[in-house]
Amino acid sequence: MSTSPLVEIQDRGAESVLKLRGDFNVRSIAAVDSVLRGMELQRPALGFVVDVSELGAMDSAGALVIDRTLRAGICHGPFPPIRIEGRHPTALKLLEVARAASPECPPPPPARAGLREAVETIGQTVAHFLDEAAQNLSYLGQLVVAAASFVAQPWRARWLSIFHHMEEAGLKALPIIMFLSFFIGMVLAYLGAIQLEVFGATVYVVELVGISVMREFGAAIAAIVLAGRSASAFAAEIGAMRMQEEVDALRVMGLRPVSVLAAPRLIALVLIAPVLTLGANLAGILGGMLVSWLRLGISPALFISRTAEIVPMENLWIGLLKAPIFAFLIALAGTRQGLLVEGDVASLGRRTTAAVVQALFLIIFCDAILAILFQEMGW
Image 1 (cartoon, rainbow, N blue to C red):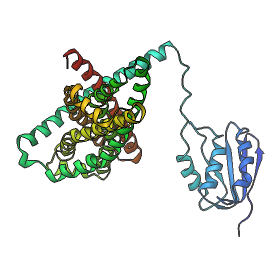
Image 2: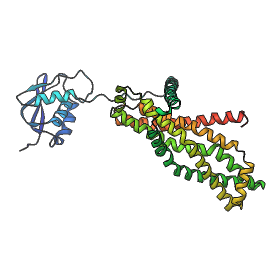
Image 3: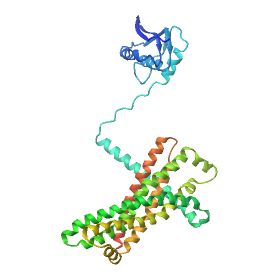
Image 4: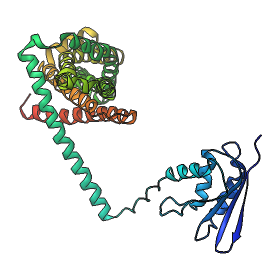
């Protein structure tokens, strides 16, 4: 039968005795927790002597709050020694365990922002960016070598894995890519029609939709959807294998994880990306054609014939050229972050998020560079 806990302080000259009565366990400790917190503020210089002669049952919860009182709530040493008076079968051992498990000090409050701190933050960010870029270049070389060996010796390629990833990462993304591209084409045609009506040149909405979709939006929409689906999936799949030590098992068997895990995913994305871009182009042009028909009265036959005759086909080839480049960057980010996963779930979440963010950054950065390059080349 449990008894209610009681606690009192007895002064004995230069020392004070913390006398405990009753049970100090998880069921009863709440009754004296506030009293013990008040005693933390009046701890004598020599600390308390704990009288356990009338102490009943004790568990780790009771030991933790008593040790907190003996330490006066501080989280850093040196702590006063644990001194016991009286006999109890487990009190001293439990108090020692509680002392060993005393909480760590919270981190210091962040320093106030100033010029020095701002310069340090900028420097650390730049250093981290350069280090990440160097690691990406190193991994890029490994990935290119692994993929080139498959191209040079196609009979050694893991075609079953490649076709599987082409279906999972590519073909299953085609509906959502075409759906998004269809509405992008509608928006382009609608906004273009509003502006061109002012000048009485609504027929030029055909060129606007055709060039925009084939040159930029088709490849970009396909790449962004692949970055969200495939980069995260690659990082999660390979990261789970890292957590289960399957990647280490591949190394023990003499196999290179980049060749076995990353290269098939890279080849699959590079092969399927132009197909997805073609689907995005088709859907975007259909969306623009629908709005042109309903809003401007441009018939589908006129829209299609004008697209074929007026819109340069170089725009289509430029979009199709961008597609495998974007796919390469997506596979690079997803597989590398997956191989960097450590042995905990938090690391898996961080790397999966980093894979998507990095893939999107690389796509937009590369798209800007290619747009400037093609424009300067007169394409």
